[in-house]
Structures are given as structure tokens and as C-alpha cells.
Length: 207
Image (cartoon, rainbow, N blue to C red; front, top):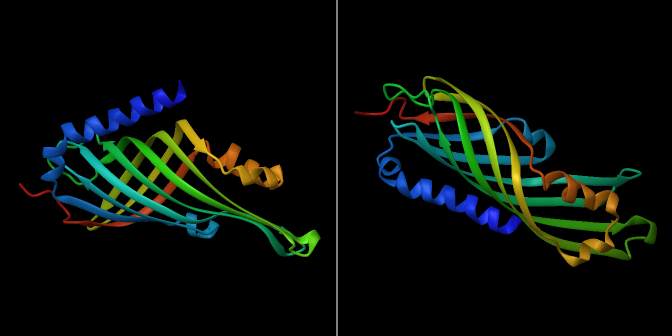
């Protein structure tokens, strides 16, 4: 049932993209953005957004880096890394007169994530090692606000996954649950709060 709901919602995004293809193809506003908070946690984000006069925008983002780290006496025994690709459809309801990125927006996104877990039991002198790879796909909704000054923009957004589907590596059962729960119960829900800055080009939508 959950998988069917996910497929339906993914279909909604694809349908919306196709029905707005003409407008998106003629978009003249673009932005390259990066998250300024996630690097402090060892993760990096790069996103490209393309918007139109009708208030529809498509964004493609990529996130990679370290999601979790476990240490014992200063030595790392667990590491969770990953990469996510996030296509997103946005709508700016208050777009007027071709202004670029005018304030409030709502969005829906599909997040495709691949994770790698590495566990090294330090109590066995490194003799016990486990590697596991898992994939998580989620559909999320978000709201945010964008501010533009000249060719620069800043963005504040928050979102929550409403449906997630995970395929976990069987080797995860050999890793302590105190570590694996961070992915199973944490990132699997994908609550997201983001602060991004970026460069807008050109500044205004041409006629």
C-alpha cells in the first residue's frame, strides 16, 4: 500500500513537470545555491533552480558527505556516509511582473538516497568489520521563503517526508542498533531545515 502511494505521488510530480514543460523550457531565471549550515556537520549541498514567469520552478539538488559518526575513546568505530539526488517541483504563488524568486514557495520533492555504513569493532582490535549499503527513497513536502538582492539570494526552507521506502542491506543486522537506528529512525524520516545562499542569473526574467 505504501509503495503504491509513493508511486502515485511520484507520478503527480512527473505529470506536473510534463504539463509545465513549455513554461520551464522558456524560463530565463536560474540560481546556483549551496547550504551554509550542513558543512558544519560534514555534508555538502549543491542545487540548481530554474523558474518561470508563471511561478513554476524546477530544482535539482545533490547532497553528499557524512551523516553520522561513532567514536570510542576518540577513535572512530562507525561511519555513515551517503549521497542523495533530489529533484523538486516548486510553486511561487505570489510571483508578479516576472520578479525572480518572490518570497514564499511550496514544493514537493523525491529524494533518492544511497548510504554506506562502516563498522569496526575496536574491542576486537579491528578484527570484526562490517560494511553495508542501503537505499532510501522518500517523497516530501516543504515550504520556504526566498530573498533576492541583486544577483544574490538566500533561502530558508523546511520539509518533511510523508512517505519513505527503504531497502536495507542484510549486513546491517551485524552492526549495533545504537548506530543503525540513526538511519532507520532518523534520516529515514527526512525532516529537513535548510539555509541556502546562491547566485541568480540573470537578475530579472526577460520579456
